[in-house]
Image 1 (tube, helix red, strand yellow):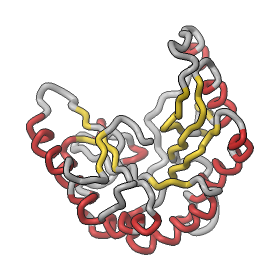
Image 2 (cartoon, helix red, strand yellow):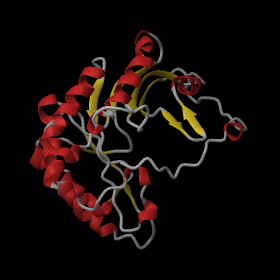
Image 3 (tube, one colour):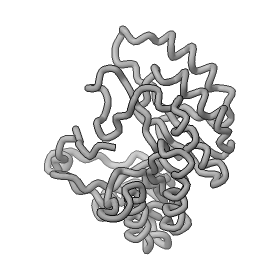
Image 4 (cartoon, one colour):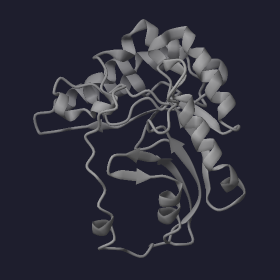
Length: 244
């Protein structure tokens, strides 16, 4: 994945210019999807997250989602994402007996296009995860208009149909891992999406998440409506806004 980002720097003074009280401050909440970032003009690590999590809501635990942060800088290229798991597990270790239990669940990254040999990476991340690793995410967003796609996650068209990618996904079955593969996912990929859960037979406990975007009135919504019924019978498919 590219390390080029199209994100703008965070302006903390602007964020601080308006605050709102929590509507239901006593309601227990699990933050099901958050990141740690360390990028030019943007640092958002444990201290920044805790400032948000403790700002009024009753956040009891969270799920960390991979974000290309603190990769290993040496060693085999395919194992460098393990550094993110090592970092997150280490900095949140003391939080597991506190509130919130930050990164109670961890979702990492592995290049599933490596096929069966990606198993080495998955096992290394499992060892680094302090018993909290729940799966891996490999985004598959594609669109002919590259301006719609985050350059951090740009991939070729039809990745879900790639035999090597499918072989990598199949490695998750014996680990009984979740597979939140789609985020910011476009309707054009839905037909191939229905093939992946069926052929790889990821356990029903797993989730394949998606969010369909209709960018304009010209979007052929009928194509999406046609594809959704193909996904609906899959017990391991969930069309949702975020990963739990």
